Length: 510
Image (tube, rainbow, N blue to C red; front, side, top):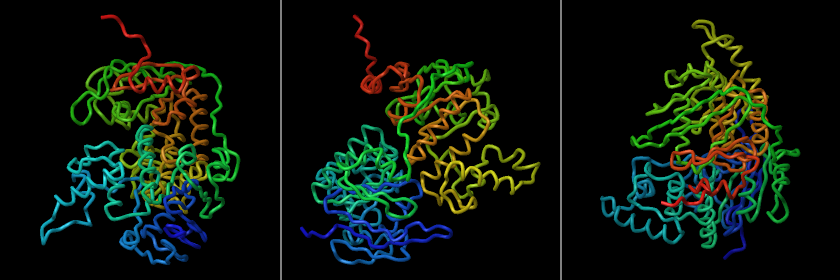
């Protein structure tokens, strides 16, 4: 094996209108190594990886694969040099099978006929070789998120990738799925695959990485290895200042019940109960965290509470009003703020610019409009204020939000929802895809809202977030609340057992 890096980029520079996204960036990926790339939202990580994969062309710089200079002008060039990329938002056709998705664009033919039998056999062999067990004939939309990610990895390996870029690979995974991914990464590197690992989760980076490079505002600002740094050290390098990784809060000052859920039943898309006789209350001035492995009814619960899904039984009362009788706009006008789990589906209109997305809930009222007339100055003033307050990285309020990084898209939603006058906040995965500096700020904002008397329902797959922010924690398992515990007294182990369905109670005699 050559001593040359699997991949090296030298002096990569990329400019967009008003933004220097990459400023003479140098990066080396060792063979069979996991090299983590860290940085705040908008630091230039994804731009660099998109250049390496041929989605963008650099203004300056060179590429070297296995010590030889190469030209990468498009994804076909990248693939031909053994570079594959798994994007944060998967590039799969939901109604196609696993095999159809994997071979799409690289089809095996026999004469003029598509040879799916050979393709399925090769996919099974690949999945067994790398520990990526998946059924080639399964329909992708029926698969769990973690399994869909395996399909994306297999898609690159099927094209003979030896360099794999994983962009925020655990952002949509449960803790269990993330653990499985790390095992897969071990097996890949043992077989010589080199991995670029982009993540905001510092614990994960310290656990999986052989080397770590940190970017800030388009430049490389540091290079280290896990044994020589810590979460605090990495956070400081990313943000350029000391970052509080722990949440400090005073005991809650409880007020009247803002959200009262009683015996709630909600169906999923198949007509099966996803939420089963769920009962809980949230008072003003407290944070109730909903913990649980993703897929145990949290999504359907949140959609029912925000008017996005019909209920089958039970009641939802928000500020003493019957919520199911109201549409989403009426709920917003009554004081509900919602940070949705799926920012693309329920949080943003991607072709609209940032200014319009910042007023989606209030576009029809002063100062943003009067009758049929929009007040463009007020809309831009509001956007510029939120950009500054929430550190949204964008060259202009007029940029379509679809052009922003995932983390900056999340900041737009959080800024819009947190800046309104609300009495109940439903925050579903509020820091997904955010960097440590942004997470610190969002956590502080949630605590401030709680201290102002806002009732907060927090749904998160991040146990650390649930434990540090919540006053009480309700654990969901198979659509039911199995137990409500005090956040100050429950341990991670106890919470993990509850999330797995164990109530910790002794079995009753029959």
